[in-house]
Image 1 (cartoon, helix red, strand yellow):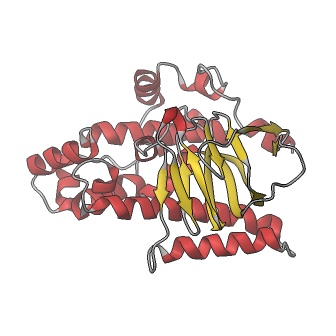
Image 2: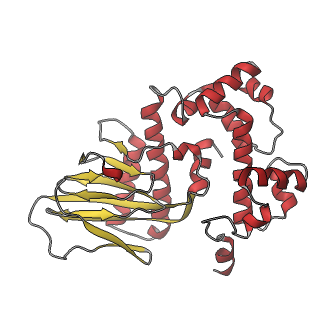
Image 3: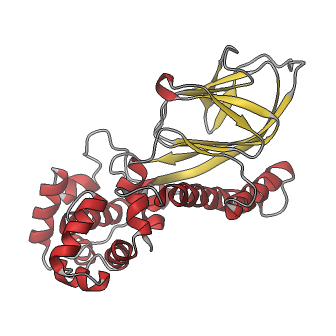
Length: 318
């Protein structure tokens, strides 16, 4: 998998959900802090986003997309001073606790949704996103994103045979296109960070190689040759742009791959070690403990602080 696909796969858990909602002013919704990430698309009309941590209200108009990546509480309303009514979770559904009577003012049509995310070991690409990613509507911009929005909106408006399969797939596609759009918008002015890393052909080639084959015994010199740079020049450039040395990132990614295998499979420790780039269980266990502060067995058993139990048990019993 490529770097962006892997970054999403590291954090995505469970099944995303979405809804198509029409609101008549006055209306205001308060979304609680959560482990997930939310998105909103204004299909018709306009509204205001009241961002996390008391940021300035953000005016949204038709075609605008906002993605709230960091899980902070926020509000959405027809006007910045409209009182906010909580949106609460009941089972798998999110319910707005406002009175049923619609307002008499202008209407706003919204496409809203959320992704479940695991923040135990987030990829730095997603961790560096701002609390609010705002992608304003611009003619000709981000056509793939607009296409995904249209398809998802159509499935929610008029579900048909196969919608239960189509909607989660379209939500995953939408998340990818949101991130692509943000990276594209920031790649030209960014000199460090992941927008810059993926736009830098030399660094992107090295990252793709690491992600394609984390078990390979990579050296800085070999990665430098792939990047078309000397060992020293590559090491400096990688550390400056990505924020850590090449082999430190390689180790981080190997341990992330190992964690996914321990969480989602029953593969023997020997196999997990080999697929993570270690020739022996002992060397792997030592590196794993140094990186995560616990043994692979403890991690597999869900003993890490604040961690959810692995999905393996539920998958086997479903």
